[in-house]
Image (spheres, rainbow over the protein chains, first blue to last red):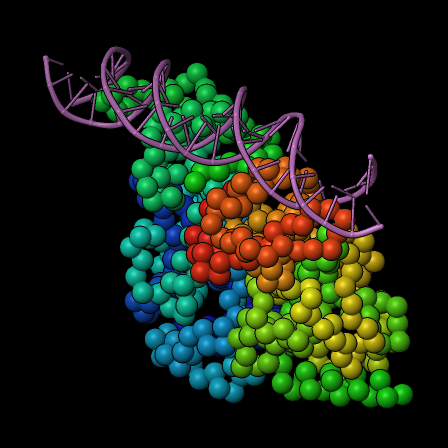
Length: 254
Length: 254
DNA sequence: ACAAAAGTGTTTTTCGTACACCCATGA
DNA sequence: TCATGGGTGTACGAAAAACACTTTTGT
């Protein structure tokens, strides 16, 4: 079976080139259709979904490894990427169960440690710019609504939950949106994003007032046409001011 | 030389029992004399200081390992301990330089990876309850003023800086103090703690008002005597309410 | 009596929140 | 003309910030 052979080769390469016992898992958030989405992979010849992840080359910075893994899955180079937690429980998942679910070849001869510690990163990407790409280990790569995830492999449901919590906390003192929205967007779109992340409705007047007061967005002359309703204005982020707000961090969306 | 032999033995044990390529570094904060302090170790027969740290047993949760390392250095079991960042740069420090500074025996025959990824934890402890304890690798363990650290081994100055930044951010939405102050303390002492962490003066009237409004402290009947001035009241934390505030997290000391 | 630090209350300003109507557009 | 969603301002209350004098105590 070709897949098993490929898997063996992949394991060989990992063993040769990568740090043992340490991995990266990426929670890639996108925003579409007023929903927060997460990019998941379906492993070959299974119905099992999991987060994109990978291993770190021996001489590679962990941040760079995360970026590399991200790029392979999304095709995007510029994204917001942030380490949020390292998962080091002694038993993160049942390896036998995983091995079975994924029909892995016998790995008992490999000098693998008993458990793997995983460094979690979350990424915020512009949904419209992502080309979800499966790799040779997986059959399918697609977006899932963050509220409707299936039961994932490993401890990936837990990892997503922690990422989401981190994102919510972050939203309260840093701006979010630059990497999740297309370059031009409307105020209601931005509001939906905030509402989705915070998981509660916001008042449009207060939201608009606050956002514009932050000085991180600029209203353009253009308006978006197309709906059977008043054409909304388009906005874009002022990157400099956005970056400044990111650094200084003093919003307070509580 | 006994020390070198001990070191060899330690390395042997680490190689046998611990996860390779992964370590823990702990930034232990204490508060004394209106100063935020960090616990440092001086390596045997050198003038080189560094953070307490260690390795993770193969079947040990990373959190538990951090707790174990902490306890060995401070003798304290109950403390506030939190993972804050994982340091995975490809070149975190110059190993040769370290090897020289610490007069390590030749480690080239060991199957050590080219670099070590380190998981950073910070701890908040009651200065008065700590018995700083050196181990067989170190000659001295003592508190240093966080503003006056020497140049540390490895990338430990950087790690302290990140820990401190994390602590400052945390202070803005979670209470701090339960683990840093003795059981009974005065309002000015608590204020000094906050001022020290935030690195700016606070107004005593507003501070007192706010703290008492949070409902996490209780004023006792006792007063502290001793100075040539008005005796301050003693307070203590209400642990339940403190824990609740920790979980819910909505202070806003900006 | 004086030096040193503790304790305390009021006013002002800022920020968050609640709230409702008209407008533009395409069907 | 109507259905749909977009856009906007004001008033209230809570919380934060600014601000200074009196009290206690030991020397």
